[in-house]
Image 1 (cartoon, protein in one colour):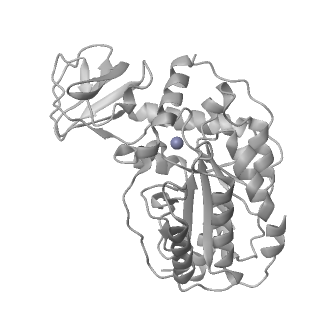
Image 2 (cartoon, helix red, strand yellow):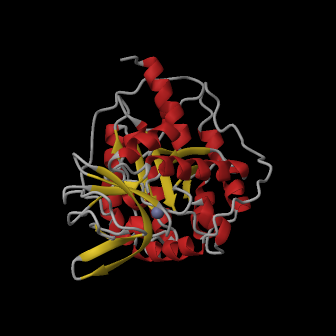
Length: 363
Ligand SMILES: [Zn+2]
């Protein structure tokens, strides 16, 4: 790969990274309706059986520790593609190959296993062997962050009204509902909406009352279970899991601590995409969407220029299954990054570089 040559640099340099955050609205969920439906369909078909494991093979060491990414570049850029659809292989990977630069796939192994529209493990392994990174996006695209109630959840109720009924996607899922004072549990029976809004249907009535300031989330042990299962499945396919992308951009609450226990990096803890190198917590990084309905060419130009000016770790994201992420748009994003002398790396490579910087500049 051309990238290997570009990175064959032996000296090491320090970087005067300047703190910079690009603020913006988190619009993750606005695009997710089609995905939500497909995932919901998939969730309902789930049988709960564990897949057979395969031998893992072919993980390459991507970078010699002596080489510095930033020696010959103005900053780093990570591409992330969500949900592991087939188009990650047939579109995103194809285009990235034209330039010899990597991307990262945020994979849902449960969907990969069950649906033709998602990557085959062998395809993702081929991408990894060619320098791509693999991230976890939960087993079946479940929302890990808590979601606010819109009405009090009263003792005896078997409906739970929340701003979005994501946690009702899979029958049998264990929920925790809590406010400042009370914490109670419930089991999902379904979901729907009526004149009061979206609700989660519960298997049996609540035994305690939680106020309207409360939130609903999956139980702590279930969140751990989801992430362990995701990692185990991906690893059984010979894939290295190097970070996490929150489904629906939902990261609030206990999920943050749990995700931190399982992954060294998060690509979408908020919207923006310019992550300062000095003092960076890799589990709270921001990213920007580059789909044509999310960013104009001018905005991509400005994003890359600023990234180079500030020498940041920039992260972009997209969904290759959407028709708003075209080959042309991916090409434009890669070319603009290269024109601005940004080194296109995986999250894992970026973490290695951050580690090197912190060793050189201990705070
Ligand atoms: Zn997603």
